[in-house]
Length: 128
View 1 (cartoon, one colour):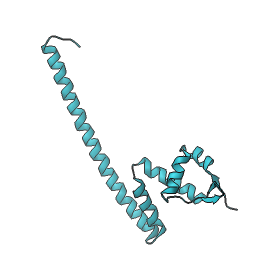
View 2 (view 1 turned 90 degrees about the horizontal axis):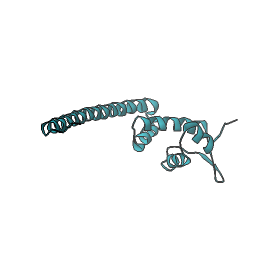
View 3 (view 1 turned 60 degrees about the horizontal axis):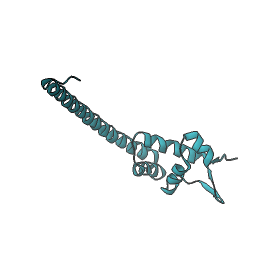
View 4 (view 1 turned 135 degrees about the vertical axis):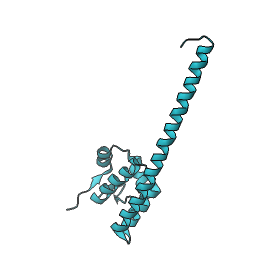
């Protein structure tokens, strides 16, 4: 007997809104069964939601997630999916390293501005 999950069960389990799950459905990432107005999610949908949320946490776009899911469903299947995922992971890692470098540079500039302000305040005789 196949186990189904309701949208309420999944929103509670994953800490997301019903709107989020409907969005993933609208984007074609998950495909719950419909019984009238009720959405019934299979175990496969639940696993996909878990992977979608993981992808979002590490910064993948919906388009990237869709691409990774689609590659799994079609040839070359899991092998292609894993290779594509590794490519996306490398790209995301590079993006994050660049962001970290940019943040470090910005922090250094802020330190310089603060030091210049403190120096000027001392020159004009104002204490902080």
